[in-house]
Image 1 (cartoon, helix red, strand yellow):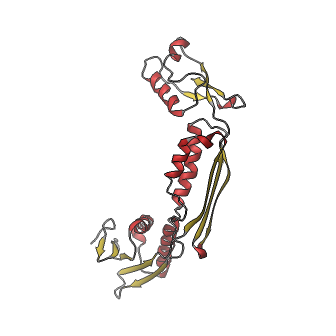
Image 2 (image 1 turned 135 degrees about the vertical axis):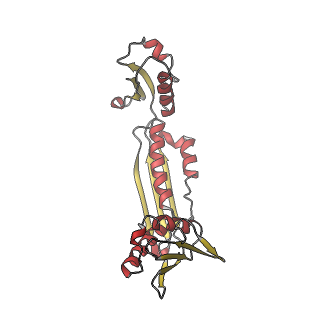
Image 3 (image 1 turned 90 degrees about the horizontal axis):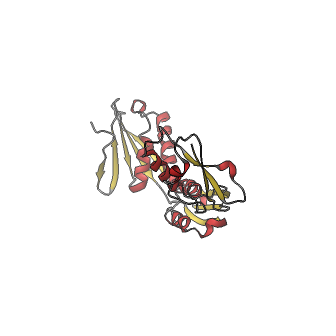
Length: 256
């Protein structure tokens, strides 16, 4: 019996053999590449004990396939089923159809981050392009990556003023709008040390940044590692004091 983790390719038509414990085989035909991979991933989430040839199960399979294809931009697939005479095999034939393409790609970075090249690189590497095939994962990833990058680089008041993904399936068009306003970039301020038996100057001597330098979370992590590598503390925690966010761009750092 063929395991559902292995797939047979017949001629130019991709066929996936998914064997099940109740002797019902599922054969997926007509997909290839990313579409095939995504559908396989979605179908693998269905317990093998539920595999059947019933109309109820076919409806469940169709829903999973449509969700898998929609996630990568295929909103109008054609799906049909064929049950073998012995009812021990269910063949699923799928035509993904035409993909939804990005008609409008409106991404704006405003505030001090507007001139930060790290945001430009993030957008260029997002996989979202004008007239490119819509990928919901790429959109969600870019949105969260912009927010995370802002926090990593000290744009602590950054937020989206507009984040919207609209899809017109009948026209195979998508409209992507992401407007992020970063506000100011905060800098490292004074280092406040509490609960330490070690002289403050010795603790500060290991910090890899100076007051007035632009904030970077990697520098905070490096400082934490530097102190952890000593035998001064049983535990140590370093963080920016976000209660001090204001017009003054220098943000105190707490060593606890």
